[in-house]
Amino acid sequence: MAQVNSTVATCNISSSPGYSPGTVWYSTNLVPAVVLSICFLLGFPGNIAVIILKPNWENMSSLSQSLMLSLAVSDLLCLGTLPLWIYSFLYSWTFSLVPCKLITYFVYGSVYASLLTVTVLSVQRYLQVIHLQRSLNQVRARKLLLPLWLSAMTLSTPALLAQQLVEVYQQRTYCRPQYSSEGQRTAILLTEALVGFVSLSVIVFSYIRLYRKLNRAAFFNNPQTTRLITSIIVTVFALWVPYRAMNVVEIAAVSLDNKSLRNVLQ
Image (cartoon, rainbow, N blue to C red; front, top):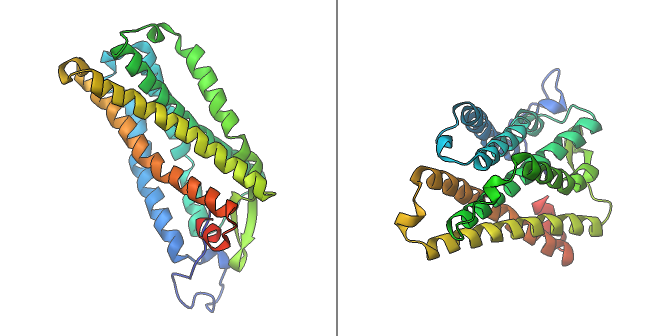
């Protein structure tokens, strides 16, 4: 969660009586704050509704239902922290280092859990439709979700270590990554890029094979379920590709020691 500083959006505030640096809003901070607010207002109640109403879940196997529940819960964990980040963007990080690290850790963990869950959904659909194998459906959700979430939290450990409180212009404090060396920064970025690339490759492979091997009638033998899972996977792909592209650009900037590009990406 990189915090960006820029010009002040409001004028002459610093000269007003009772001025506090934390009350100044920066123009470039307003944009992500607005975007995150929209995500929270739409996503948080939306995922709660999914958990309560369970739309079209009656056509899914018990494993698919558990994976969909895992996806909704992971999204809720991430979305639930957005008010804190919105406040941080607009004002300053007012909490201690421990909440900074823990909240960031759970955000990364929920994001990785979402990505891994969607990957498993793709593999399950591929095996079920292409190879007519339903053995994965017989696996108990607990045996699959437990290692999935453990993997997600393990992959989030670098974020826990790197996150620090940083004081910047006009005594604002932000919770953002501070790397001990360029080697650590490169290793963390490579790990994120590799996990994202492998997961997205599995998703793309699974669905390309689905569309190539089967005609529409066979593929949409359960249209509502298939459309639901497909829409989730397409959305995840569309959102993750730009983020991973930024990872690659940042790795290139570190490798080439391009300080100007690195400052832009921070």
